[in-house]
Length: 306
Ligand SMILES: [Zn+2]
Image 1 (spheres, rainbow, N blue to C red):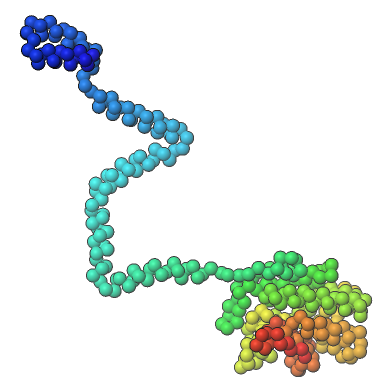
Image 2: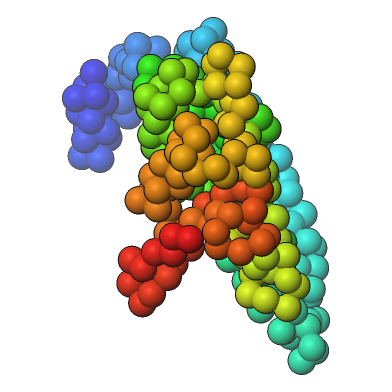
């Protein structure tokens, strides 16, 4: 049909007689009725929204959020149109502090704040003896008392050794190393009690554990290992048959079964702890064993056994 129109135009240009042109007019009109006016653009435009509309409908059927983004750009556009004012305000705000020499350092301090916050994380370590069940207790929050403290303290209430649980007369606060050594030591004493007194241990009589003080209670002395949850005082043992073997009443006579068991316990402790102080160390230890894992010597391998 376009070819016919072009032919008619060509004939007109070639100067075809008016009569002939009149004759061709009906054909031209007929062609116009068949061939719509040159309006390809409007067709192409509706074609675009058509696919877009079903897409939106499909999205509307599934999730609700999709339609939201469309109003957003509109609002954004609206805001953008009105935006120049707020942007200008922001620029003005940024521009205002700039001239102030004092305002600049304040802004520089702000970014450093998050770095400080990251240091607030509490770093603690797990205790294998607690995980295995050899030590019965739970982790405690970090302890910090001046120079004293322990990052990963435990509250220990019992140990599981030699196939049975041996309770502590009172829960003690220790670090993991002390808890593991205590379990091994109580296991050894349990075996000695079985051999010398024909009864296994039922419980351990505990004394001071965590306490921020100087050695031997002297405030002017160096801080005791008790201040770092790295020491425990033990006053005695209770056997399953009900007998009580305590340091003060039973250290002597040494030849008695009770005295012998206490010396075996003292000797076993010297192989597991770095510091063991008993009645023969000084008067302040006449009623208990002091056990700790303090560092002695340049390589922390020296031991004190008194
Ligand atoms: Zn002590």
